[in-house]
Amino acid sequence: MFGLGTKNIGIDLGTANTLVYIDGKGIVLREPSVVAKNTKSGEIVAVGTEARDMIGRTPGSIVAIRPMKDGVIADYDTTAAMMKYFMEKTQGAAGKPYVMVCVPSGVTEVEKRAVIDATRVAGARDAYVIEEPFAAAIGAGLPVMDPTGSMVVDIGGGTTDVATISLGGIVSSRSIRMAGDKIDEAVIFYIRQHFNLLIGERTAEDVKIQIASASVEKAKEIESITVRGRDLISGLPKTIEVTAVDVAKAIQEVVQEVIGAIKETLEETSPEIAADVIDHGIVLTGGGALLKHLPEVIADATKVPVFIAQNPLDCVAIGTGESLKNIDVMKKR
Ligand SMILES: Nc1ncnc2c1ncn2[C@@H]1O[C@H](COP(=O)(O)OP(=O)(O)OP(=O)(O)O)[C@@H](O)[C@H]1O
Ligand SMILES: [Mg+2]
Image (cartoon, rainbow, N blue to C red; front, side, top):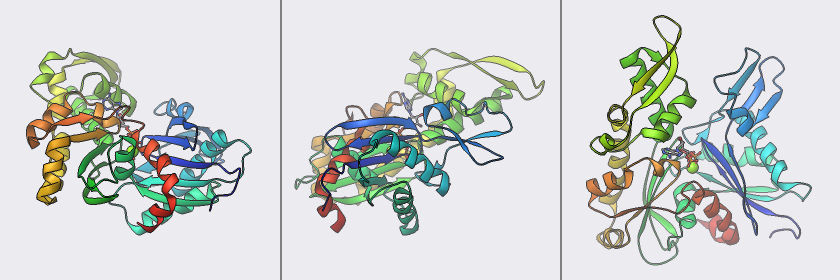
């Protein structure tokens, strides 16, 4: 069904990052899902990494937009423009590609339709969607087609997708809008409440990546860091010191929601799949999998071994791209 000479591509259209996978080449693009626009003319000023560096630093005439929110399209036109830019950047002059894009497992038909339409507008010959946890499992190298249960937990920027998979299909799943962005928000909220200091989302993400831990207990081993922002009372720049224990406490709610979703999904599975999951463990993918001490905390709560996939940020893109090889099978699912 694919035209000769036309490249097939897989796109991981994420809330935080967009990755493009080209059949035969692997991942050819990894960029933040951010677009900078001129507020007056509507003209796009920058896309991807360049636009991300502008977040929180734009003059009045420019806005840096994250067009995806909670795993779905929040700003349709900007998403389509961003995809078009990324597709052109990676495709060159090759003909229109068939494109597979991932969507979180809980999305509505309308949300799915929006992704397909935006991908066509962006220049796809045709577009198909795959559920993100299924793609994550393929990309993590799990035996998704075998008659054995696997469990994957993909923690991205917008959503945490939990799924058990067997025989090429999702057996049980949960998708919650609790992931990296919510952790960043919790850090911002905590620092505002306790220090009267306003920090930007980029700073909050830095704090998370450097010192956030899923375990309050183990956070004691992590050193404090200094954080800069604007004092809410004086209005002036200020530097404070935050401890990893405080950050760990601040993000506990999000961590507990993720654990709750994993437990609920496990409770729904058949005894056979539960047994398989005990044997093979739970595999974590997505950027959120890199949160310090997360595997230990999940293993503790579920009594199941937990592993981080190799290159967790790339799994969904790899799986989305690989699934293009079975596109006829995917279409029937
Ligand atoms: N070392 C780290 N520790 C904690 N979080 C991290 C780390 N590295 C990246 N992240 C977070 O991972 C998230 C991005 O992950 P990923 O690229 O998988 O998300 P996404 O696919 O864009 O989002 P979604 O799948 O929800 O649409 C961001 O919130 C980022 O801050
Ligand atoms: Mg993702």
